[in-house]
Image (cartoon, rainbow, N blue to C red; front, top):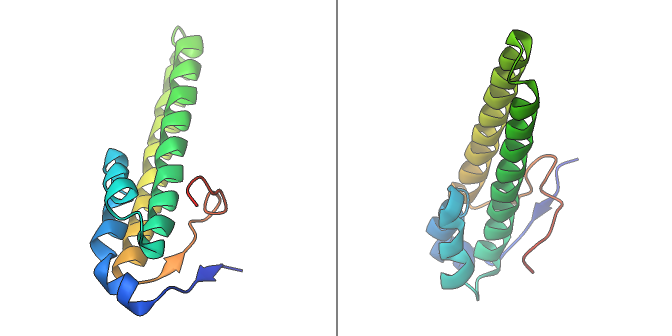
Length: 119
């Protein structure tokens, strides 16, 4: 079941833009430092930071696999498919996060949303 957190409506309306920025790669740093007092922005900043770190980790793994399999034709195809899958999955999570932030909802992202880095 999807876990949903409820925040103060004023906090949500004042910090939707920060919530949106949280999912756009390195821009996650803006809400982390600029909206420290907003629980809503912190929630989305945490989700965005976890997504950003997961994207980096998955891309490193794909690069390692690429280095190992780079000399075979089948390996190159596999790396291409893995790279595409990581990109599509990242895009889906990015869109889900932005839609949640725009609609004022605090839903955790699938698979990685339970990880807490920022409190």
